[in-house]
Length: 283
Ligand SMILES: [Mg+2]
Image 1 (cartoon, rainbow, N blue to C red):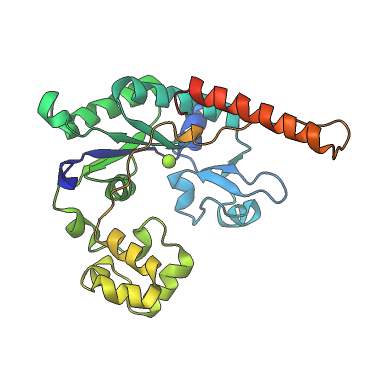
Image 2: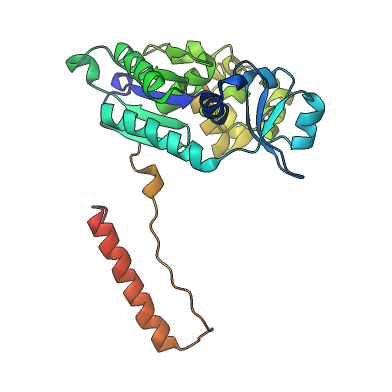
């Protein structure tokens, strides 16, 4: 498939945990809500845009969040309720799209390639799906649509909150050009500082370099940064992300080093796994 013909959607629920809490308690709407960080050494797992204005962000120690935003509403969080809401959204998406990858509790990739020919244009279709999700789940969600997963994910981030963005085929480089390189997924703080020190703060600067030059500076990693800076990515939307591995286990009441017993058990366990794999049509 010609890469410019692919249509990949990335959908991400907006401050998901906060949105679920607000659905349960509308009094929280418009207020600085912080999930997590309630116990002694706990960290923030999610926070509302109102809290972000004070510099609060996820993974920050709760104590620090309290300093920055003393009037914030801190909530312990309830993973079970979040998981239920996540499953509901996944169900709506899977009912609508044939190829779905659940990338995390609040993120999905959809491969909608070819839809333009048969149903309607993929942007219109995805906008309708987004409205359906908002209506049926009561949760805000944003999406990016482009020719690949990488550009769509960045487009989602740019569209937030409550947004949607279509990067037309051929416009990927221009879309990324004005951004800072830390907008590229996988470029962490450390790499960002290194790149800035070399004068490579803007994605455009990397686009204007040769891939060989990036490779000579950073090896294979440099090559991969260059490709991403140019909006090039061919990774596939993988279904059943949560079933990439299967396992089986046994716990012994007492320790054993009986080799024959262990060997027989191992064969049995492999057979069990083989059965499970065949049943799930992955064998
Ligand atoms: Mg999210």
